[in-house]
Length: 315
Ligand SMILES: Nc1ncnc2c1ncn2[C@@H]1O[C@H](COP(=O)(O)OP(=O)(O)OP(=O)(O)O)[C@@H](O)[C@H]1O
Ligand SMILES: [Mg+2]
Image (cartoon, rainbow, N blue to C red; front, side, top):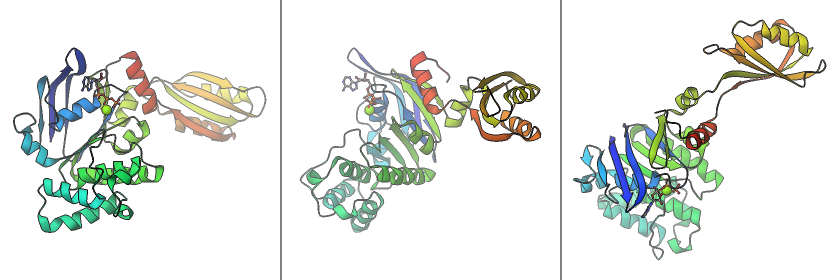
């Protein structure tokens, strides 16, 4: 649905993006994750025909964004980073105006506008001018205009920025639902948000894609070591000895292990061994109480930090 090949954009001397390639299929939500100035907005602007690339190609729904820009624009809904809105228009009047621009049949417009206002929580602002709205409500108007014509492809630049927590949850679930039969690219700085909504994540830094994969695989690929953390109540020496007898244990670290109380054990297993059930069984066999059992994996946040600070490519 979206095919991007070797896309590069330079702003005069300055770098925008550098040799970006990826594909997004129908029914997929791809998240752009990256620090400020990474190139997320630049990529989105090219995909939405807002500006041309310096080199490389991008196709949306089979149409080239440069050669066939009108056909591309007919099929996408775009929420830009800063939403340009007409502040002296009433909310529903503006949305009806956008629906008209997007060539919705006249008789459908009123119903569509009412439905979209309901979906993004704007119904009670129907008698307000856009200029009277707070930042979060303007963001909702921006979302509504992107969604109004039910486009096949949605490009959402930081869709939840400025929204309150309740609305963030609603919009996330709205996007997830929309993603089932559409193609969506969204950008975000919020790591849990990306792993929650997106099937795949592209980590972008300094104009390049540093990694692109499912949140799970990214976590898996960068798992530093196969460790399990356990809090077990028992004589530390005995517990440590029993854990040491498990086949495949490479190392055990004990914290607060001076007594018969609870101690924290960090057990490092050889690669490919699933540690948690083995630790649980050992505790049960020794008749020790097991208070906590946590596989230690890197969170998407750790991975992100690792990739953007070590410049490590794991594509
Ligand atoms: N209109 C412009 N003129 C010159 N340079 C630009 C322009 N727009 C973006 N850039 C540069 O291109 C690079 C990528 O910017 P971009 O806006 O794509 O980043 P971003 O990933 O969206 O960042 P943010 O998280 O802050 O929104 C930055 O170095 C930025 O300074
Ligand atoms: Mg941006």
